[in-house]
Length: 180
Image (tube, rainbow, N blue to C red; front, side, top):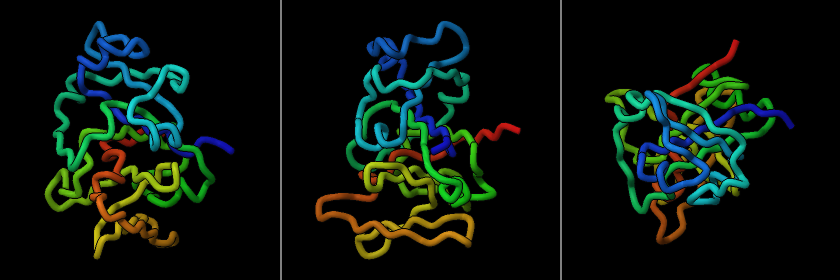
């Protein structure tokens, strides 16, 4: 199996960076961001050091500009996922993302409210212990996961009785990087 997406869920809080021994605080204009497998990010509120694949850097000014909108209880403050799957997984959101794209996920934004007026958010959604990258809508206690690419099927998740949509959303895709 090869890596289709590298999903990074960012840690904006410097307090978390200072307390977490696996995430030393950035000394310059960059903040450290941790990468772990998607099944770990989907199931763990906090990523333990043994699950860290690498630490990457993002500009602090970019991370501070991101708006927060958490619906329900936050699922932890900063975890990262390295999404693994087949070519079909990477093509679900083509051309918005593509196989091999690097996705930065904002864990502090799990609301279905559009981040920018008139634009649909792309989310990492927890399903069956993994992350699915998709547009998300709700209807009659169901989450509807819509791909951008019409060649791929719509998926539906039934919300459990006490659950809200934000409980299934791991974060909003706030940056897509594609290596050429």
